[in-house]
Image (cartoon, rainbow, N blue to C red; front, side, top):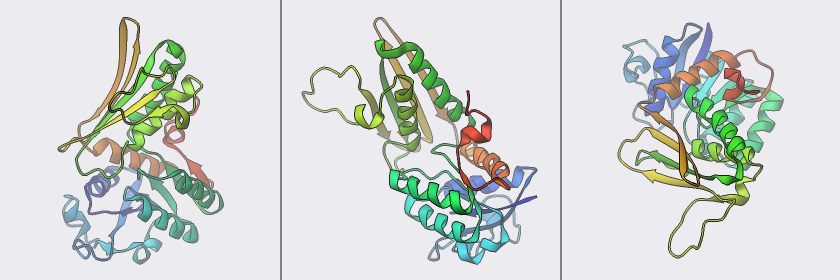
Length: 270
């Protein structure tokens, strides 16, 4: 059994990851932690996650439990994630990172840390369906080409801290690859006022934040006289958590380096 530690174990995602790890036949949930000032510290992790008491107490920080596990799963906040990655590098612990909002500088540092010290799966979205969507969107963009305008609309709950979502940005990167563009050059993230005609090369990414929406992403391909839409709707957080569990089982024992969910799911050449 692969021993797993959950960062942010008492949070909304952390609780669902605990449940999916607990259900996975190759994984054993051995520890979870929160920030030291969290009121959840000291509570039974199983009760917190709705699994029933399991005798595992929520720890106040990673260092207290790091030696108990082989893989750390982190869906917290970009600053906390990078601190944890540096700790994991010092202790040679594998990681699964689903945190969004990581900057290009963060990703470059993460790639360097992983290459030298530990195997890590990092992806903006770990749901199997979303990762298939990434690949299909790129292929559709390549087939339709410049004759179709591309727009992406994403919606999440009102508590989400980053915008656009990491998933929307990844979708933008994938469709941009499909039509041989650079998202940094053609991405448009807001429109207001007299803006003139839409640029031929634009890829729009628009954001909705409202209520308790778990996550919705739609890619529009709009041409003359027709429109195609690719949509993924998350009904709950379990698909993300289940993907994280799959990644944890996959990454244990791998060579040092940074991997994606495409590697985990065998989609790299799809």
